[in-house]
Image (cartoon, rainbow, N blue to C red):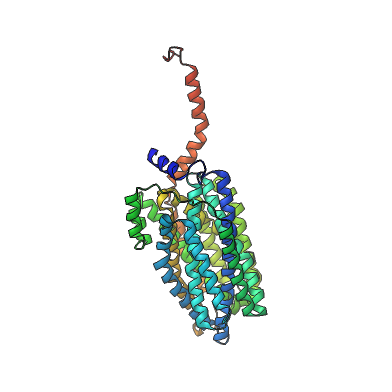
Length: 467
């Protein structure tokens, strides 16, 4: 503890306050939210344009478009799995802002180039893959939150919820704006996406903040960590952590929840085939999804955790709700049912911030970037495996095999199984570190009173009184 405190004092002097100062932490979080919101909005616009380009390329054939989108998503996921964990881990060495700025700049250049030939499916595919690699900004933002809120109990889950809610906010504005602009012209949508990303770059440059990463390792260990960063993957990181059984169990639950949530990458073609919705109508629904998730992860989670449920039990309940909502989505046959099921599905989004907070509490401070990169690597691996599968399941559900009873939501039914398995495994998760910490926080005033009482019973000579 003394060594860690000494290292922190050496990095953060009186002129450079610690990253956990409340005022400074809030200031950084506000700037982070603005940058991330602009990033997600522009990326969401691109995600609305590209499926439309694929549908036009295949003359409106939803089955072919779904398979092609699945394979593009699979290729993106493989590259993300190979690259992003190492990039996120390198933020422990090079700094969070360096990686954050690189991801925003890369997305801007990719979207700007695509804006000149948006109807070209090859250029669109390359742009989609390039923008997917820029999602390293998510684990980096989560690592910054870990730097600012470590050892703060449920406040850490709330802060992770803010990042997730910002992601939801981007899904509120981006799809609606993307659908509206795509109906006007895809050129307009692409140039708008590039312009919004440029605003994110400007905010990151103008409103810089002091680095939040904590360098508590000796120089030799930092150099060793740097030399192995490029080889790091989720399995290697989790296997080297203490309390392996709990960490690995939480990582498996996180991966299963990611598999189930990846099904929403295929809902563009599902909604187009089932309800004949166009880009604007799909964008409106995606906006409602974003609003619901933002409300749950920024407001409702503060009531649920830890007021009604500890984080470990919130994971169980959330996955059970998510599994139920996915079954209902898979069986929905009228458009209004998608909106009716939405509040239930949004409650299932509590699982991610709770798991991230619990795992961050069990990870050394100097490996927070590596942890968030590893978690993102697990999510990407899950998407890489499940996205092509979901495309094939959609094709199967709408093929001649289901000619009498078409089942376009077959992929959602499969995703519900993954959520259910995660729910079963999460029963064995125990958040001992945070429960102990919260108990100590509650007992601290009582212990102080006891200490003061003992001091009052000391005699003037310094010997304890008989009483």
